[in-house]
Image (cartoon, rainbow, N blue to C red; front, side):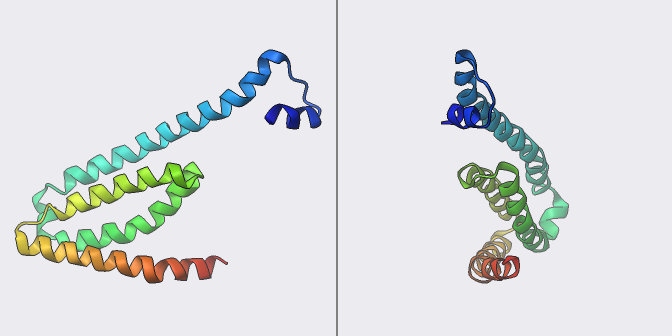
Length: 139
């Protein structure tokens, strides 16, 4: 009950402003999520277009490995930006989808398989070891 907390803190509220106390934080959270989504959409679109280039297909494995390791701090930045896991998950999923589409940008099937399995191994290692190491260092 935000109005009771504000009354306790000595902030007078009229009847009209009591409904605003409940509505404004929700509007701010939605606007902030849309803003962060747009900020994330622009680099992801550029990355997606980059995966169709010949330069990417020639060095696909290096870029896939680099993008995977770049996603580790990006997930931390996204969770700091939206400050709620339920809002961060769709943004992180969009990054993962673009990364997987980058795997599809390989020149042939063998490059695709190499990229896919390297991405899979990096994901397994990241979930098993890196998360534990970062939690241990952070605490």
